[in-house]
Amino acid sequence: MRSVTKQTTGIGSIQAPAEPFAQGPYFGQTPPGSTAQVFAPGLICDTRPHQWESWVSFSTDGNTFCFNRLGFVYITENTEQGWTTPKNIISVPYRTVSCCLSPDANGIYFMNRKEPSHLYRCQRTPDGWSDPQELGPTFGYSGAYAGFSLAANNSIYLFRSKQSGGSSGGGIFYAPYVNNTWPRLIKLPLFGTFPGIAPDESFMVFTAIRPEGLVETDLYLTLRRPDGTWTEARNMGSKINSGYFEFGARISPDKKYMFFTRSNGWFDNPYHDTSDIYWVDLKEHLPESYR
Image (cartoon, rainbow, N blue to C red; front, side, top):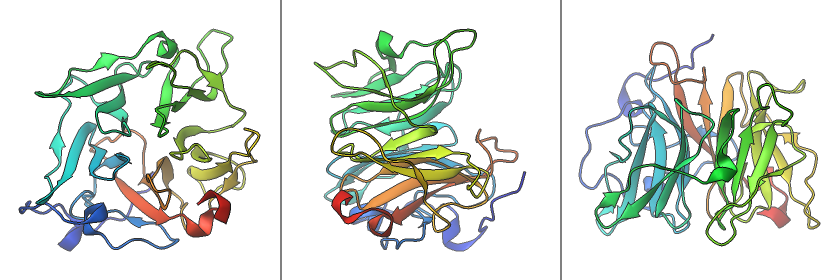
Protein backbone atom coordinates (compact mmCIF):
# COMPACT_ATOMS: atom_id res chain seq x y z
CA MET A 1 0.00 0.00 0.00
CA ARG A 2 1.34 3.41 -0.91
CA SER A 3 1.62 6.16 1.67
CA VAL A 4 -0.02 9.53 1.27
CA THR A 5 2.64 12.23 1.08
CA LYS A 6 2.49 14.27 4.27
CA GLN A 7 4.17 17.42 5.56
CA THR A 8 6.05 17.03 8.82
CA THR A 9 6.72 20.63 9.79
CA GLY A 10 5.16 24.06 9.51
CA ILE A 11 1.41 24.51 9.14
CA GLY A 12 0.96 20.83 8.32
CA SER A 13 1.10 19.70 11.94
CA ILE A 14 -1.39 20.50 14.67
CA GLN A 15 -0.27 23.52 16.67
CA ALA A 16 -0.78 24.27 20.34
CA PRO A 17 -4.19 25.98 20.46
CA ALA A 18 -4.44 29.68 21.08
CA GLU A 19 -7.59 31.52 22.12
CA PRO A 20 -9.68 31.79 20.10
CA PHE A 21 -8.96 28.58 18.23
CA ALA A 22 -9.95 30.18 14.89
CA GLN A 23 -12.21 32.95 13.61
CA GLY A 24 -14.51 33.40 10.64
CA PRO A 25 -16.55 31.12 8.39
CA TYR A 26 -14.87 27.76 7.76
CA PHE A 27 -12.28 28.59 10.43
CA GLY A 28 -11.07 31.58 8.46
CA GLN A 29 -9.75 29.40 5.62
CA THR A 30 -9.34 30.75 2.10
CA PRO A 31 -12.03 29.02 0.03
CA PRO A 32 -10.75 26.38 -2.42
CA GLY A 33 -11.18 26.40 -6.17
CA SER A 34 -12.28 23.52 -8.35
CA THR A 35 -9.22 21.45 -7.33
CA ALA A 36 -9.49 19.77 -3.93
CA GLN A 37 -7.29 21.09 -1.11
CA VAL A 38 -6.58 19.95 2.44
CA PHE A 39 -9.07 21.57 4.81
CA ALA A 40 -7.72 23.73 7.66
CA PRO A 41 -4.20 22.24 7.95
CA GLY A 42 -2.78 22.76 11.40
CA LEU A 43 -6.26 23.41 12.82
CA ILE A 44 -8.49 20.49 11.85
CA CYS A 45 -6.15 18.37 9.73
CA ASP A 46 -2.89 17.06 11.12
CA THR A 47 -1.04 16.32 7.88
CA ARG A 48 1.78 14.33 9.46
CA PRO A 49 2.07 10.61 8.59
CA HIS A 50 -0.19 8.16 10.45
CA GLN A 51 -2.70 10.80 11.52
CA TRP A 52 -6.38 10.43 10.60
CA GLU A 53 -9.21 12.93 10.19
CA SER A 54 -12.42 12.18 8.31
CA TRP A 55 -16.23 12.38 8.22
CA VAL A 56 -16.96 16.09 8.54
CA SER A 57 -20.30 17.86 8.83
CA PHE A 58 -21.52 21.38 9.55
CA SER A 59 -24.80 22.39 11.12
CA THR A 60 -27.25 24.26 8.90
CA ASP A 61 -26.19 27.64 10.34
CA GLY A 62 -22.52 26.77 9.83
CA ASN A 63 -21.65 27.38 13.48
CA THR A 64 -21.09 23.82 14.68
CA PHE A 65 -18.59 21.44 13.11
CA CYS A 66 -18.20 17.71 13.73
CA PHE A 67 -15.43 15.40 12.54
CA ASN A 68 -13.70 12.11 13.29
CA ARG A 69 -10.08 12.07 14.49
CA LEU A 70 -8.43 8.67 14.94
CA GLY A 71 -11.79 7.06 15.59
CA PHE A 72 -13.20 9.62 18.03
CA VAL A 73 -15.85 12.27 17.46
CA TYR A 74 -14.84 15.90 17.91
CA ILE A 75 -17.01 19.03 18.05
CA THR A 76 -16.10 22.71 17.72
CA GLU A 77 -18.54 25.64 17.85
CA ASN A 78 -18.37 29.20 16.57
CA THR A 79 -18.98 31.64 19.43
CA GLU A 80 -18.75 35.42 19.71
CA GLN A 81 -15.08 34.96 20.61
CA GLY A 82 -14.40 32.56 17.73
CA TRP A 83 -14.26 28.80 17.24
CA THR A 84 -13.73 26.68 20.32
CA THR A 85 -10.89 24.16 20.48
CA PRO A 86 -12.17 20.79 19.14
CA LYS A 87 -13.31 18.51 21.95
CA ASN A 88 -13.90 14.76 22.00
CA ILE A 89 -17.54 14.49 23.05
CA ILE A 90 -18.43 10.78 22.86
CA SER A 91 -16.89 8.47 25.42
CA VAL A 92 -17.46 4.94 24.23
CA PRO A 93 -15.40 1.76 24.67
CA TYR A 94 -14.92 1.42 20.92
CA ARG A 95 -14.06 3.69 18.03
CA THR A 96 -16.77 5.44 16.07
CA VAL A 97 -17.11 5.39 12.30
CA SER A 98 -18.87 7.76 9.91
CA CYS A 99 -20.08 10.39 12.38
CA CYS A 100 -22.56 13.04 11.20
CA LEU A 101 -23.99 16.13 12.89
CA SER A 102 -27.73 16.74 12.75
CA PRO A 103 -28.78 19.88 10.84
CA ASP A 104 -29.87 21.64 14.05
CA ALA A 105 -26.61 20.65 15.84
CA ASN A 106 -28.56 18.91 18.62
CA GLY A 107 -27.68 15.36 17.65
CA ILE A 108 -24.66 13.36 16.51
CA TYR A 109 -25.13 10.12 14.60
CA PHE A 110 -22.46 7.47 14.18
CA MET A 111 -21.65 3.85 13.53
CA ASN A 112 -19.16 1.96 15.63
CA ARG A 113 -16.51 -0.49 14.56
CA LYS A 114 -17.56 -3.09 17.10
CA GLU A 115 -21.11 -3.33 15.70
CA PRO A 116 -21.16 -1.90 12.16
CA SER A 117 -24.73 -3.11 11.66
CA HIS A 118 -26.23 -0.46 13.98
CA LEU A 119 -26.64 3.30 13.98
CA TYR A 120 -26.41 5.36 17.16
CA ARG A 121 -27.31 8.88 18.23
CA CYS A 122 -26.14 11.16 21.03
CA GLN A 123 -28.34 14.14 21.86
CA ARG A 124 -27.38 17.52 23.25
CA THR A 125 -28.69 18.15 26.77
CA PRO A 126 -28.30 21.04 29.24
CA ASP A 127 -25.53 19.00 30.88
CA GLY A 128 -23.68 18.03 27.71
CA TRP A 129 -24.14 15.09 25.36
CA SER A 130 -26.22 12.05 26.22
CA ASP A 131 -24.90 8.50 26.14
CA PRO A 132 -25.21 6.81 22.74
CA GLN A 133 -28.63 5.38 22.00
CA GLU A 134 -29.25 2.84 19.25
CA LEU A 135 -31.71 4.02 16.62
CA GLY A 136 -34.97 2.14 16.05
CA PRO A 137 -35.66 -1.22 14.38
CA THR A 138 -35.42 0.19 10.85
CA PHE A 139 -31.65 0.11 11.22
CA GLY A 140 -31.33 -3.27 12.87
CA TYR A 141 -29.44 -5.43 10.38
CA SER A 142 -27.35 -8.59 10.31
CA GLY A 143 -25.04 -7.29 7.59
CA ALA A 144 -22.91 -4.14 7.83
CA TYR A 145 -23.30 -0.46 7.05
CA ALA A 146 -20.60 1.58 5.34
CA GLY A 147 -21.13 5.29 5.61
CA PHE A 148 -24.19 7.53 5.78
CA SER A 149 -25.26 11.17 5.68
CA LEU A 150 -28.25 13.30 6.65
CA ALA A 151 -30.32 15.64 4.52
CA ALA A 152 -31.64 18.92 5.92
CA ASN A 153 -34.98 17.22 6.66
CA ASN A 154 -33.20 14.51 8.74
CA SER A 155 -33.69 11.76 6.16
CA ILE A 156 -30.74 9.34 6.30
CA TYR A 157 -28.91 8.04 3.24
CA LEU A 158 -26.71 5.00 3.82
CA PHE A 159 -24.99 2.00 2.30
CA ARG A 160 -25.45 -1.48 3.64
CA SER A 161 -23.82 -4.70 2.55
CA LYS A 162 -25.65 -7.74 1.30
CA GLN A 163 -27.03 -9.69 4.22
CA SER A 164 -24.82 -12.67 4.95
CA GLY A 165 -26.66 -15.88 4.16
CA GLY A 166 -29.87 -14.04 3.34
CA SER A 167 -31.80 -12.72 0.39
CA SER A 168 -31.57 -9.03 1.29
CA GLY A 169 -29.46 -7.23 -1.30
CA GLY A 170 -26.94 -4.55 -0.50
CA GLY A 171 -26.65 -1.07 -1.95
CA ILE A 172 -27.54 2.55 -1.25
CA PHE A 173 -30.74 3.15 0.72
CA TYR A 174 -32.52 6.10 2.24
CA ALA A 175 -34.73 6.31 5.29
CA PRO A 176 -37.28 9.14 5.13
CA TYR A 177 -37.82 11.00 8.41
CA VAL A 178 -41.50 10.86 9.34
CA ASN A 179 -43.06 11.88 12.69
CA ASN A 180 -39.70 11.96 14.48
CA THR A 181 -38.64 8.52 13.33
CA TRP A 182 -37.46 6.54 10.29
CA PRO A 183 -40.18 3.97 9.53
CA ARG A 184 -38.60 2.28 6.51
CA LEU A 185 -35.61 1.88 4.24
CA ILE A 186 -35.99 2.42 0.49
CA LYS A 187 -33.39 1.01 -1.87
CA LEU A 188 -32.07 3.35 -4.57
CA PRO A 189 -30.93 2.20 -8.04
CA LEU A 190 -27.35 3.34 -7.40
CA PHE A 191 -24.17 1.27 -7.25
CA GLY A 192 -21.70 2.56 -4.69
CA THR A 193 -21.04 3.19 -1.01
CA PHE A 194 -20.52 6.06 1.49
CA PRO A 195 -23.36 8.22 0.09
CA GLY A 196 -23.11 11.97 0.72
CA ILE A 197 -26.46 13.62 0.13
CA ALA A 198 -26.97 17.32 -0.66
CA PRO A 199 -28.97 19.14 2.05
CA ASP A 200 -31.97 19.52 -0.28
CA GLU A 201 -31.51 15.97 -1.68
CA SER A 202 -30.94 17.37 -5.19
CA PHE A 203 -27.71 15.42 -5.77
CA MET A 204 -25.50 12.81 -4.19
CA VAL A 205 -21.80 11.98 -4.21
CA PHE A 206 -20.76 8.42 -3.41
CA THR A 207 -17.69 6.19 -3.55
CA ALA A 208 -17.24 3.41 -6.10
CA ILE A 209 -14.62 1.34 -7.89
CA ARG A 210 -15.32 1.33 -11.62
CA PRO A 211 -13.30 0.61 -14.78
CA GLU A 212 -12.94 4.32 -15.59
CA GLY A 213 -11.82 5.17 -12.05
CA LEU A 214 -8.41 6.41 -11.01
CA VAL A 215 -8.05 3.66 -8.35
CA GLU A 216 -8.14 2.94 -5.44
CA THR A 217 -11.67 4.34 -5.11
CA ASP A 218 -13.21 7.46 -6.64
CA LEU A 219 -16.05 9.85 -5.95
CA TYR A 220 -19.02 9.84 -8.34
CA LEU A 221 -21.80 12.40 -8.76
CA THR A 222 -25.45 11.66 -9.50
CA LEU A 223 -28.24 14.24 -9.87
CA ARG A 224 -31.81 13.82 -8.77
CA ARG A 225 -34.27 14.62 -11.57
CA PRO A 226 -37.56 16.45 -10.91
CA ASP A 227 -39.42 13.13 -11.19
CA GLY A 228 -37.32 11.62 -8.39
CA THR A 229 -35.12 9.40 -10.56
CA TRP A 230 -31.33 9.68 -10.54
CA THR A 231 -28.98 10.35 -13.44
CA GLU A 232 -26.23 7.93 -14.35
CA ALA A 233 -23.33 8.61 -11.99
CA ARG A 234 -20.18 10.20 -13.43
CA ASN A 235 -16.63 10.22 -12.15
CA MET A 236 -15.78 13.62 -10.62
CA GLY A 237 -12.39 13.68 -12.32
CA SER A 238 -8.74 14.20 -11.47
CA LYS A 239 -9.26 17.55 -9.72
CA ILE A 240 -10.95 15.57 -6.94
CA ASN A 241 -9.99 11.92 -7.36
CA SER A 242 -6.48 10.51 -7.12
CA GLY A 243 -4.68 7.17 -6.91
CA TYR A 244 -5.66 6.87 -3.24
CA PHE A 245 -8.96 6.22 -1.49
CA GLU A 246 -11.57 9.00 -1.74
CA PHE A 247 -14.67 8.50 0.38
CA GLY A 248 -16.98 10.08 2.95
CA ALA A 249 -18.29 12.97 0.82
CA ARG A 250 -20.33 15.59 2.67
CA ILE A 251 -21.94 18.70 1.17
CA SER A 252 -21.87 22.10 2.90
CA PRO A 253 -25.24 23.57 3.99
CA ASP A 254 -25.14 26.16 1.18
CA LYS A 255 -24.11 23.49 -1.40
CA LYS A 256 -21.03 25.56 -2.36
CA TYR A 257 -18.43 23.08 -1.11
CA MET A 258 -17.87 19.37 -0.88
CA PHE A 259 -15.78 17.84 1.88
CA PHE A 260 -14.34 14.34 1.64
CA THR A 261 -11.62 12.06 2.96
CA ARG A 262 -8.48 11.01 1.08
CA SER A 263 -6.57 8.11 2.60
CA ASN A 264 -4.07 5.37 1.89
CA GLY A 265 -6.18 2.87 3.85
CA TRP A 266 -9.63 2.27 5.30
CA PHE A 267 -9.19 1.57 8.98
CA ASP A 268 -7.23 4.46 10.60
CA ASN A 269 -4.55 1.99 11.66
CA PRO A 270 -1.85 4.21 13.23
CA TYR A 271 0.92 1.95 11.95
CA HIS A 272 0.28 2.55 8.26
CA ASP A 273 -2.93 4.48 7.49
CA THR A 274 -2.92 8.22 6.87
CA SER A 275 -5.98 10.32 6.10
CA ASP A 276 -6.88 13.98 5.59
CA ILE A 277 -10.05 15.96 4.99
CA TYR A 278 -10.22 17.81 1.66
CA TRP A 279 -12.64 20.42 0.37
CA VAL A 280 -13.48 21.70 -3.10
CA ASP A 281 -15.71 24.33 -4.69
CA LEU A 282 -18.60 22.60 -6.48
CA LYS A 283 -19.37 25.35 -9.00
CA GLU A 284 -17.39 23.72 -11.80
CA HIS A 285 -18.64 20.25 -10.95
CA LEU A 286 -22.39 20.91 -10.80
CA PRO A 287 -24.89 22.14 -13.41
CA GLU A 288 -26.00 25.67 -12.63
CA SER A 289 -29.55 24.62 -11.73
CA TYR A 290 -28.22 22.37 -8.95
CA ARG A 291 -25.95 24.91 -7.22
